Image (cartoon, rainbow, N blue to C red):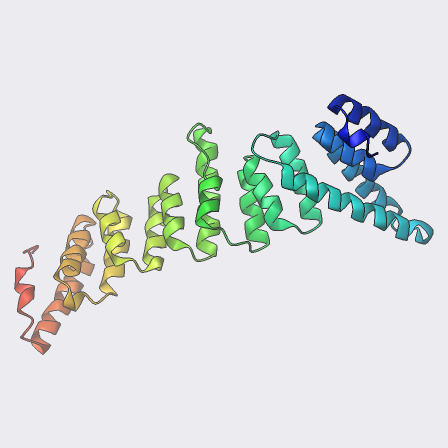
Length: 272
């Protein structure tokens, strides 16, 4: 074996076949790996794992089989560490599937991202509560070369996952990229970023967005901010929500009666 690992790749593969035929699977996998035949190394790891499942109930062989499977897992884990973006998507995805079986979720997600299996990666983050970092968000964002409808669905899946983990600003960005601006502003509202809500609504041409923004801003400290007051009036006006607008003017009048010193309110535009 020590001579085989120092030989040429083609000779390593020949030696791997020899050891596989002799049921010395750990040596075979190591040589397939070093010889560059990663798919064959993975196939052998999976086959041993499947054999364990089939005979797991056989008490006389259970200990031996489990030991073999443990060795195969360690070797496949070593292979997984060596995989990179240059590996084929099929190889990456298959290795990820094996890691999922052994509850190595974070490494599996990393391989799914390399393989461009965006849906699988996002779904796994949701199922196993893996936190999606800013770096992962970039890797999980499909390039514009991906077919438009598929890209939108991936972005929406990603946005839902980010929303579920409380990353509302990132979720809003992904919903915006997916063309779902209503869900995008709902996420911004939940983020509590008042400035971003105003900016987002200001460049939108959507009645529902105007109304959502104005309703949110009414919950803020509008009494001490002329800018927020103006935004509320502007958004209710653009959405033709005149009942809400009238209610807001009534609130302003009540506040002015309670505190006549609020002279800054006189700078508000006349929308009557």
